[in-house]
Length: 171
Image (cartoon, rainbow, N blue to C red; front, side, top):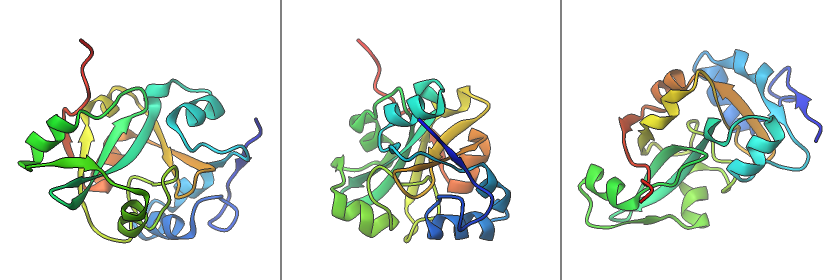
């Protein structure tokens, strides 16, 4: 699979809103590290295969609805979110996966390309601690064909996330 390295916002492959969010937050240098893949990186497995990294080094940005209010959960690509743990963490009565319309309305991006920050609206963000196991993780850059690398601590801070343990545990 071929990759296109980035050099600026127009050529980066990043969604323009996300490129602007990077620049506005002093992270414009990351635009040069965005990688675009013609075959897409819509799923964590596709992204890991395209990049050539472990699945756990992919940062998934998942939108849930907690009592009808959108919440973003950042999770490593090798793990699944335990919705019950998210519900308890938020003190919500009910937590469900948000549908595609809610994801786009909340973030401004389509499923498969949602970045960890730079969203249309401000939402509460939870980040699973497993992301911190790596020195660098890869996340969507606003579309299903582009990803960028970032230190997980910096990503969690920039996303305004609360560190939690919300991974599904194997039996």
